[in-house]
Image (cartoon, rainbow, N blue to C red):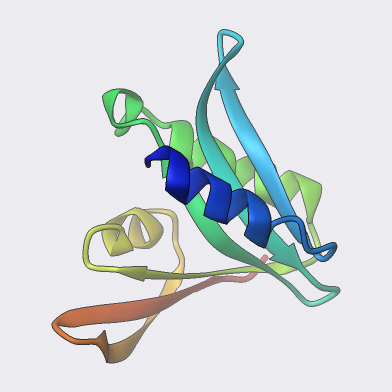
Length: 113
């Protein structure tokens, strides 16, 4: 993610109902998680982890932490082919949204507790 993208993300999360969390490892920020929460659900709008520490369980820890913070709400995310396997592995129900953008199939991922 480049600096322009980070500024766009910061602007998006300056809206009061949006929440942006940093993910730290040994006091270094290694990722971000953006959420919108209501009484019924928590929508994961962004989840990004630096590539050099992906596939080491940090994403699973993040999802578990979100569940700890919001134990009564279902978790909802929208993703593409690159990350749908991550949500499948964690037990999310997957619903295909079809080709939402040209050449890109999107999925809605839902986990109820």
